[in-house]
Image (cartoon, rainbow, N blue to C red):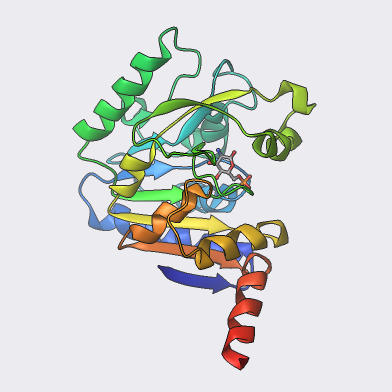
Length: 252
Ligand code: GLP
């Protein structure tokens, strides 16, 4: 894994935005896997700025979002569709048929999952997958569990995830208890993966990810250790525990 420690979240976001722009320039029909949460907001802002200030063309892109809450209306301010439209898609020029979301209100969620995996396959897989990481090590909504699921599936959210995401809702009781998420297969089949983590509250899970000696479904992000082209990009605060351990081990 490549590990980059940036001085600030802004510097890390700039690095990731530039990497995405390079792919957009170099690839005739790039397929991006996109994440939500607080962490990638800076990247999306920079992509928006590229459109607004430089007139950058995004019309050849296809995107697949990682996950969605079950039961939230797409117009709900905390749905991931709403997040992506607000933070990115309303401001750049990807034609809407090329933008893919999971529908957490689908009447047949099992079919919705199958259809999504098929659509990713038909697009030729993902060229670049952007990820955050949960405090419990989740990627997308692949939660800690005895097993990791390959395919897109419905998942019950961890208490820790509900607590972490309650900050976006009026109360934790309003956070949906279930979500629909891409499984680990399309993520691991991506040509390139970039996982971003910022802030001291991510420092322990980042350290766990970078030091785990085992492939551990209780730490879903540990599967990324098997991928040949993963970059973990951190700010100083998120890298702190890991870097302290490195220097202690260097001293011993
Ligand atoms: C959310 C999303 C993940 C995201 C993670 C971290 O619940 N399902 O895709 O990466 O949790 O979020 P944040 O960036 O807000 O810390």
